[in-house]
Image (cartoon, rainbow, N blue to C red):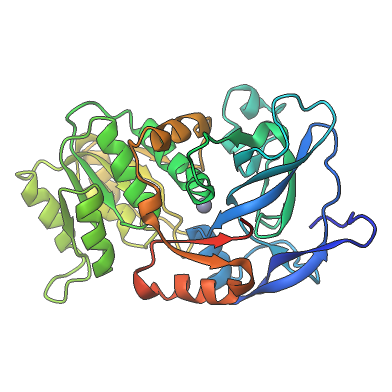
Length: 361
Ligand SMILES: [Zn+2]
Ligand SMILES: [Zn+2]
């Protein structure tokens, strides 16, 4: 985390110290913005599935400094100070922030793929300070001003919505094609909603948690199947989708669950010549698909790495009302209840879809 606190000023932050240990701490204030940067007073931060991985697996690679790693990458805030050379932004503006700071000069950045930049710094990861704090310094180019009538929580949701947009981009969906989305967490739900906007015909989803199945049915899915049904084996969601498509399978399957069995299910429910898009992060760092299935059907398999160039479109979708992101924000916690917030999210308690940390108003 930033060590150049100025004049001994401190601020509040959510520190991650290890397995299931997230708490409020005082850390040095990040200080004034460098040239090309802005200082953002953080407004709202979503708790993401990847934050969940840190919380439950403690596996973050890099060293944890004494004050803990500051978490949070889905966020919005108000511009508090502007560094030299920044023309485009003004103090007081509400912005959504792209959390990936790519280098801009490597081969992949220059080819237009900043999402796979090997030099990337990512907010709320072991290599860069996160946004669950009063302030964060960030390059001005990562900030996207929000229209007047968008809220801080909606701004924070543009990050997961961006992942969904990128996933549907990768699928090259054609109007009327059938889709399956495995997993009805926020990423799966947004992916289903964006796939609909992109012209999907019938959208099938699978989800083991009952309240999420109900939500999915209202939000974006035509049918939702339960992979954990007591009278069924895990294979039955595959049968259900194949039956629903008269044995043909769907044109595109999105894996958005991160479970060990879902990549293979995605392959099995896809029609010959179809596409499988893997969005989820597997719990055990392994992905399995049956070779004969993907080979005989000649499937195209793509893996999603975050997103690229999606913020302007995400803002447009929310502002125009095409995607309702606010509906997924089921819980709002003030920053000083951060430990409780993680417990609720972790237990899938209380009908949680996305919990947002409100840092300031
Ligand atoms: Zn996220
Ligand atoms: Zn790069």
